[in-house]
Amino acid sequence: MTRRGWVLFTLMAFLWGIPYLMIKVAVEGVSTPVLVFARTAVGAAILLPLALRRGGLRPLVPYWRPLLAFAVIEIVVPWWLLADAERHLTSSLTGLLIAASPIVGVVVARLTGAGEQLGTVRWVGLGVGLVGVVVLAGPGLTGGDPWAIVEVLVVAVCYATAPQIAARKLADVPSLPMTAACLGFAALVYAVPAGLTWPSALPSTPVLAALAGLALFCTALAFLVFFALIREVGTSRALVFTYVCPAVAVTAGVLLLAEPLTVAIVVSFVLILAGSVLATAARKAKQEQPVPAVPA
Image (cartoon, rainbow, N blue to C red; front, side, top):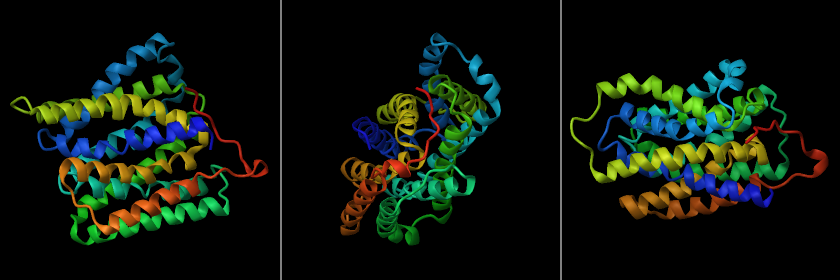
């Protein structure tokens, strides 16, 4: 993987590893609809003026169907499920379960004929990473809330499916207006539910800070980096950053929320990170397949 690819990979691991901590803090003070609405509305408010300045939203019109599908699968459904699940699960366990996304992504790519070929080393990397997730999440699965765990696993499927839509159906769509439009649509979906469950008093400072961080960094900035990463390294390889996100999520949970740090966590960290390196290993030139690009 290129140096730029590694920079984007590392940045995404942080930007989508830290949200679990912020969501855990935010759900203590606001409802799920308010959380999702705040995140999407602020993100759209930041990105929409930039998109309009760079050509507007008109180029999106021919792609409204895949755009709608992407918005629903990447934002509308999973962000509700994540927030609802974290009312019952630790931020660490939530982040760990999301690490199933790269495995699901490989299956989706194969079933839909995305064309990304995986060599032996990358298959081994995916396997090692999955073992790390199982070692760490296994004990939590037996003691956690079953429905909340199902919600997070559905999120993992969504996060594995949406990039395939972006890579195959939205390859000619500029990422900035696309992201702004998707966030704006999601904000409209949640506007009424948020209004009906709006807090009667101003939330605490930590809750407000968590909402701001989710909107500014984990949403507006993260989506731009996400599309750049897909263009740089391909869909299946890009999704492997979710193997590192659990390490970020657990570290943040342990340091800031006093969530438990066990031997299993340490061992799993090693497996997850090793799997990430192997799964993102470069293939020989003759084995490379063209990857649909998402213009920045």
